[in-house]
Length: 127
Image (tube, rainbow, N blue to C red):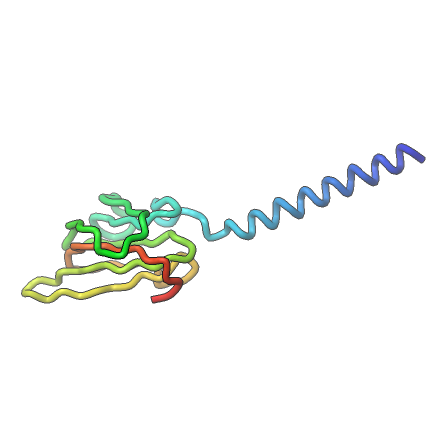
């Protein structure tokens, strides 16, 4: 009888352990890299997102961090909840602001013909 209880207890412990592991895995599903950019960074590439990473950012700020990459840069946001604003110089005095959604959305990357001149990571969950 004792062996039966021990087996039942061991089986229950394994089941609870597996459930806990699957729950942890489920919550971390978006905490992953994308196109070589590690979580929780925003990466700037010197061309398409499969190109070389030339800058990585991860700090939330209330201002644009200065940077200068392009023309023809791309960017990826691997952060789970934060959005990213990019200041882009398109030439001829034309400056635009692009928002990258968090990693759970498909609008979390951009390719641009302009030059990125600033980046601001915000704690906002949507653009």
